[in-house]
Image (cartoon, rainbow, N blue to C red; front, top):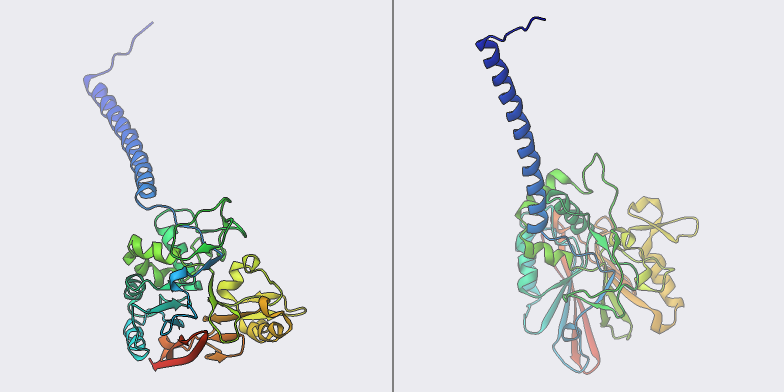
Length: 345
């Protein structure tokens, strides 16, 4: 038996190869550990998003009290980041922070030049809001960018009592999947390339505020007719009496209702007939205590809509139209004055 002795040079090459392979293994191990650490850190650093509340009430101190004169509710249509125009509208309505309550009808942000300024204004002035499709899309992109779970929604009757806007949520049921359009090409819904720069600007206080906007905000009795009023972004389906059971996707995105029975909604106007026409007609058939007046935005193509039981305030400000506010004032005991105020954009 012969034994082949390795030359010093061959032994050296083997040693170098072994060290190289060991180095690669260590490098890949460190890389995996680093990505894992980044993943864990990002989840710890950026908390999961608050689930969407289906329905919330205005806090008691923000509802119109029929015995208190000069209180006002200012309901504002789609602003879409048009910050200076919002300030001009507030000047036009003579906004008083001590007496007035502002409610935004969704799509406060994106498209315009200063979405962050709009959210800062809303926070600083204790304004209330409902979630629009653009806020919903921003939430999805924010979650994707920060490697969070996609936003969820509380199921109907998740709480023993109606949630109050602007307060911590206490529920007894787990949230379910949110009102999200399935992602296309692996990206969350919305215009990812356009909206990602905005997502990167949003601080945690901004995203917490946007996440607190419910799908439906109950405004209480704000009409001289003595019926309940609600704020939504898209609309409501006429055949569902219970607000908690309204489909949140429709509430946020509704524009039309489709045949044959017009009980299903669509975001595409030409798919059917405008939802608000059927809504207005059906309210006449309901008992007074079951009627709702709806304030909504979203449908810029239809422009200003002023009907007995629904009022659409998306008047295309970001496209050079107008920015609209519907102002309800308690003039004297149990008497309300309602006024539409607009500025050119």
